[in-house]
Amino acid sequence: MSADLVPDDLWERIAPLLPPRPTRRHRHPGRLPVSDRAALAGIVYVLRKGVAWRDVPAQLVGCSGVTS
Image (cartoon, rainbow, N blue to C red; front, side):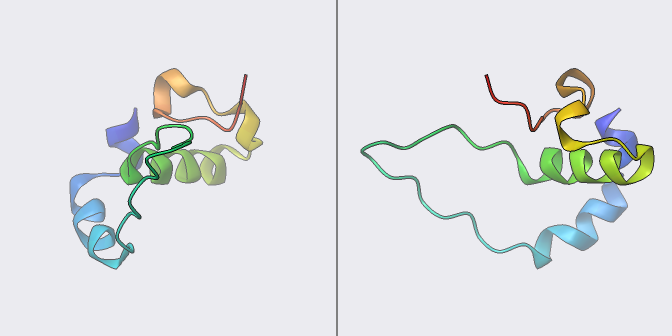
């Protein structure tokens, strides 16, 4: 499903526009970040389906706004 939301040609156009990812702190690094492509797929899913970020299915998209 994620590949359907962000096709390769779209990703090739968007990836160079994204800022570089900051380095993680050694102490208290926090949660592991998802890939930029998975985050973009989640954003596209929300815009297409009209659901809230907390309702994004993590299994389909690869990221979710739900914390537990």
